[in-house]
Length: 154
Image (cartoon, rainbow, N blue to C red; front, side, top):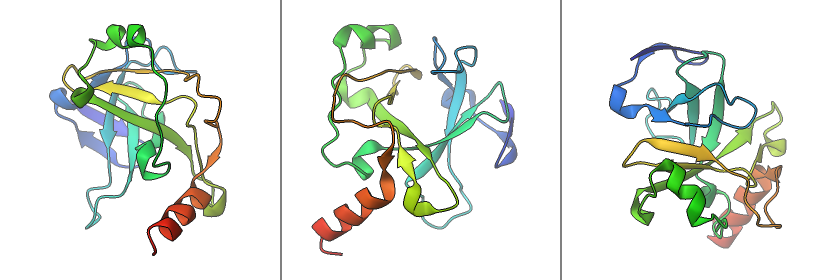
């Protein structure tokens, strides 16, 4: 599928890379076809990927695996919710959270409260609101990375 994108121009996405969000995503319920893309020009793959709408070129969200910023991220997800995306096995579940990346990177945040749950086997996904009270909508990514570096002795 050929797609127009905000950051990467016109790109060709294999049909088997398209992820369907049957209910859309929060605030964009009418958009259901997305792809995860990253800047392939870089030598090393960035931890940040882009959730790009295949239907609206300007709709793109930076996303990250929450484990990369919060090593103890364990959202409570009701099994019943997962049935709507094919009831995936644990090995087929991929979780991303959206980010806000301002010009001042020390103010970069991630939304740990509303992750994207992807069934990689079915290429079906949904965005949910988790019940975990300790997960913030504006979790400071910069501070989290600094904490993880200190913990790892970097």
